[in-house]
Length: 110
Image: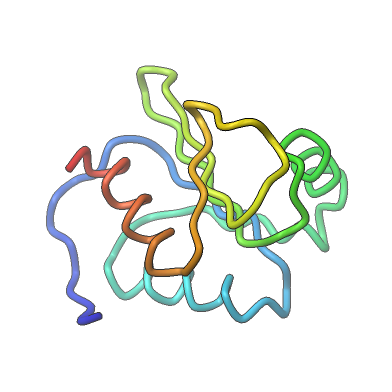
């Protein structure tokens, strides 16, 4: 995938929930930085209570977890796996490329 900076303004705030030594987390963060997409990063190893909440409520222990909240109060979680029933606010990815594609479609309203 060629990486180009995105000039279009996105809609909402992106938060990545990551682990310190997760190669997938690093790959996603590096790609978003190269694209110029703003995001907040929360390391759940440092912020254990947040990690516990995510794992309990989203029924996953896989990272990264992507959260996008739009000004309209619409939101989405993008996860690699979960035991939750399919929900409107949850999308599942199999590769970091799929996660990035879903994130960009929702964030930029493509």
